[in-house]
Image (cartoon, rainbow over all chains, first blue to last red; front, side, top):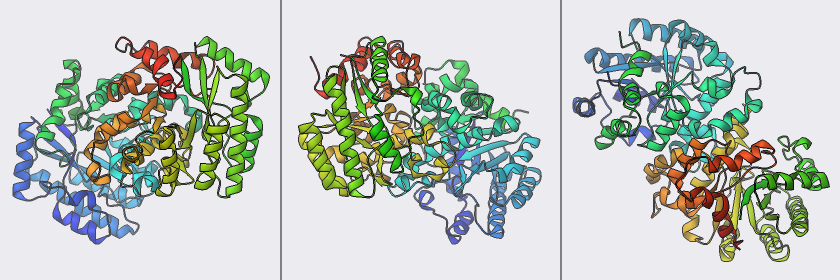
Length: 315
Length: 315
């Protein structure tokens, strides 16, 4: 079963609310074929068919319901999850969805997680690489991880789109250029530093874009462990192998191979970044894995096996 | 001729001054033997001999004389360059040095540049990946690049260790683990965005650590050029091949092979990060290049030819 774990959906109502609440929608506005509109959905399903993708597991991308006012965050999360659940209910074999949480409000997030997973039957949770300018691995957020661990949930991570809160990225329009993969890398190191994968081993954490820069910084990260994770009992690269990584890497075959060499093929799952990869590019998101020269057994795992198991869709 | 382009030297008078002016020297310990004492120089030469390294090109690491007060910056730069030139004069066949300049003070930097290159005979300059929270290729620094271009100078870039000015990196002990390579990559994207090499084509820029995350994000940069560098006439993957990259990563053949595939053998030059890598790690910094299984002749280019040509030190 081919599942695309990195695909976004932008229902009109969600965008309207986000805009009203002052969110930066520039990365969303310039794209197409992502709404609930009938023509958009037909185009999406057609691309999935052409690429042999059975199902997309949808997420909100960087339009997370993270607002300072708890009621705004909670209402936005609820509406978002309802809109996603509604689409999933119409096409239960083609779409699943990750629940958005109204962070940084932990109680509201716990409540919405329960509703989204138990009542709406969502397939896991999505979280930003940071909660606005706070680390997503902050101690205050522990109850969220504890609850996901109890449930054995999948957790799909996505860049917050804030350029790691660096003016040297944001002021140079580099937020999505290299800011996003930097954010992926940073998130992984924040959770490694706090030993979240060891302490909550049942959460299936999926980091996008091959883990950002993790594959090339691999040994540097172990070599500098005393600087950021002195108390950890295992090398950071061992902890890295407790996570999963999606294959969104703009057809970067050498990068995919480097990630497989470092993490193992078992740790990679197919993702496309729909609707930022459309038509030929959507097709290529599968093809570059198929034509990577990796062993066939590895390609099958990456494209057609591991994600179903992570999301509990193989039963 | 085997030249190590990424090697540091920490003579006590400059180290102490930099420290006194509030600079971070915490990553250097006396045990590293990076200073000017006779036994330290002897240990350095012995290490170089063991690894077959004929010459190190010395630089200040992140201890740039970048200070708010022009006099502080200018005095510090002058002292650093004098100390480096003194060692080079004693061992002209074993050491050369990159000049430090007192940015952000452009006039003072131009003056010291002239003194260091013309009077002290230094082989090029070193710049930080940012200058006191400003981009190193800030428009205000244009005269500096114009002069370097006129001279066809080599510029050795080095991280400043400020975690790309991101609290999400700095506050989590990650400034060197991922912050430094992110700074390398950010520098490269700034050079691309400001079309520095189009305007100053004679600059020979060496970026450390394979450009940080560059191999992994280059395709992504190409595809997002229109958002951050819409006026550029060439793609990022063409521009990056107008620069050079050193091999200083915690040695891992997969990563070298990856950088080699993306950047090409012509663009890679050997670097060690001495004295942070010393003893066995220094030896490994050479050996892993030989053992990476690169196409015939490429390891020799990287280890023994490219840097000499770049620096004008060919026999």
